[in-house]
Image 1 (cartoon, rainbow, N blue to C red):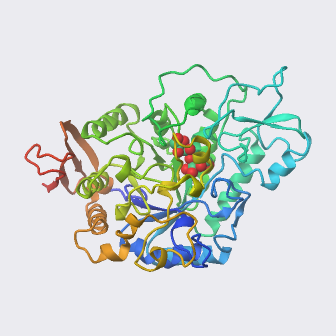
Image 2 (tube, rainbow, N blue to C red; image 1 turned 90 degrees about the horizontal axis):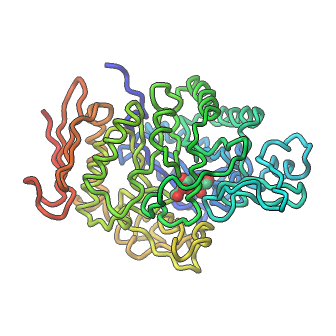
Length: 509
Ligand code: ISL
């Protein structure tokens, strides 16, 4: 049997640093807090952590707007804290993946400060600048994911710059080789500090159409349930990124070559794309430009029926047969799946079991293992700029970003100070300490099913065959050269196919 790489079929635990553990008493989590809680993470049996951005940032998008890629934001600590975190993680057998946001920087980044100062400075061409149309309007019809045009007028340069997200997140010009070289150097910097891999934010957004052509009309009706968060009246033109991107493939190959030298892995986030599955194959298929791709199939929708799961894998089988996806049901951008799908505890347990039996890698989002529901955040407490823009149709992403609840201490043991987002009372019924003491808890269930996956090579790396949905009953097999497992899951609250409500049967043989 060939050696299976750690990431292949691995379970990756996503940590949102602002909300994991505060050690400084400012109501915001930090790196020392993550280190303090690593034994808990290791106790879950996961292979790796993915830590959302902790780099120097004005925090307009809570770290997804970086102003120094090689610095730690003082809110989160210092470089020494990061070195300790890595060392401790490795002692515990955990890999560390960090989140690189390379598509754009903060407008506070020194590169952008210089770039906007004139049209002929060393960084003049590091961002995407364009002249207005003769009538003064933006160069084309591109729209920002976070609302409004994707172009912002800069009075000093008398040009527009491109931003796919916030105005304060100017888009780096990947067509400029100097930009690519610098970003590769930056990745090398973190590899040398010992990280085991990266989550690449918005990997399909790196390159823009160099000819700045208008987007074509909509290829299909925007279905509100398609993307998550569900309601964004402006993002319907983001399919400009779906054009084939030979330049991106070339860049990812350079990135892959760098990683090979370190044995590191990447998981690229393919977002807002109608061609997500084609890109999945292009990036993670036989050519191996990335190890894994983060896909959104289970991060959206009003429910997750057995039929939808089998449809996803049918499509995957025909469109991206050699790909290696990374599945997730929750993350820091979408409504927690317990609330999104209105799941009872038995239902949430069944979905966890199914998720961890699927072929691919799996990302779990902090608090998911506690069965935390989405928090209801009042407008006055709102922090997310995306939410402020679209309230009340879309309430933003704060509801899934509230702090972890550890024990019955003040603020659930998260912080001695008022947390940056309020902790819902309902969450305090579901603390780690309370669930450790209850053999039937969600936490114990996650630990059990993660352990099951660890102990069965077929669940981690085996083939997946014969997937089929009959009504609410999903069946499939996982097999490698050592074992075969038959999985039957009743994804409904009624008896079906001889299974109790929400029962999942895993039979070896
Ligand atoms: O959340 C989404 C649903 O519409 C996606 O479109 C999301 O905006 C996209 O996948 C990019 O997300 C990532 O980059 C953003 C950042 O705000 C998100 O937190 C991050 O996950 C910009 O850097």
